[in-house]
Image (cartoon, rainbow, N blue to C red; front, top):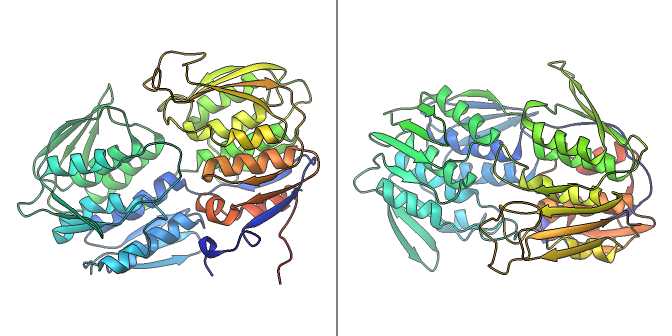
Amino acid sequence: MSSTDATPEEDMLIIHGGTPLEGDVTVRGAKNLVSKAMVAALLGTSPSVLRSVPAIRDVEVVTGLLRVHGVDVELDGDTLYMDPTSVESAGVEEINVHAGTSRIPILLCGPLLHRLGRAFIPDLGGCNIGGRPIDFHLDALREFGAVVEKDASGTHLSAPNGLHGIRYELDFPSVGATEQVLLTAVMAKGTTELRNAAIEPEIIDLICVLQKMGAIIKVHTNRVIEIVGVDELKGYRHRALPDRIEAASWASAALATEGSVFVRGAQQADMMTFLNVFRSIGGAYEVDDDPVEGGIRFWHPGTALKPVALETDVHPGLMTDWQQPIVVALTQADGLSIMHETVYENRFGYTSELRRMGANIELYSDCLGGTPCRWGRRNFLHSAVIAGPSKLHAADLQIPDLRAGFSHLIAAMAAEGTSRVYGVDRYITRGYENFEEKLLGLGAKIERPVTK
């Protein structure tokens, strides 16, 4: 039985809260890079090797997608070997096995169009946190020369005249759309200029992967990326950058539970914005730069946490995936805090569960505490005011999406009493490797329900 087929009782974690988290955890490669680097392997004419691969469900999904397209994929520890020399078309039914579990299939289109001249996209899944339309992707692919046809089974793409370079400007520096352009442009004939591109660390690491394969990619100022198409790409050998989202999640858990957690593998450079926020709230941290065993220790210093006014933004701003765990920590700050979400319009749905636990959180459609954003005056509840400190109490919680789900785990661990959190296998395993073992290693009092 897969995690998505589990019954509610089987897909539930019992958490006895009130215990500070103490100890060490290790983070591996970033979920938001590893899956894209796996897709990039499709472009090579020789095998690729990706290191520091986390044991998460998104990796399983992309592995399945690659295999049905003829890629030989083998995992040895945390090292992934991918041989794309026999890439082939996959049937609609084979691909649809993965429909509804990931948005990755859309990123296979460019590489498959280059390798096979055709591609298919099933219905896309992922977390329900706001509009993430595939229009950006399809519009860009059409510009490259793809022909897009939709039917009841999904979206079919072909490239009867091949793909050619384009000049393209994104309305918003979308990470997914930037990845799409990069994966398509590297072998398109001519030069592609992408304006208003995303420049997140995971994007830069993907560019490093593609450059190792033989791509010519120039990152200019003002979010402009220039890609010169090449005729052939080889395989790569690459170690994925550490997952800064998971690192921040453990940091926030340490703060909310008044504990101390050393996150082995966390890197200061990619977390500078988060570290500034963490310190502004009143948290303490220490960086260990050892290249093998280094990381960052995060802890609650024992003094009252401070309220802050924050807003999410594209890199180098406050990452939207850091928002939810920070909000849980802010429920324990002494005063009024503001979180203004500017990336996704519907990312505060998880706060209803926090309110049931005793958190004092109000949502507003106004752009509070920062500059006006694209969601202003559109009636989206995209600003939160958090009044603290709040004494959290246990509750039965239903996880709505991946990042909110981990925040619910943090809240349950910080609360008094026993909580039951539903949906942990469906969502948490998508992006957090061995999260139960890590929680137990930090002293969390958790258990699975006894099932017949």
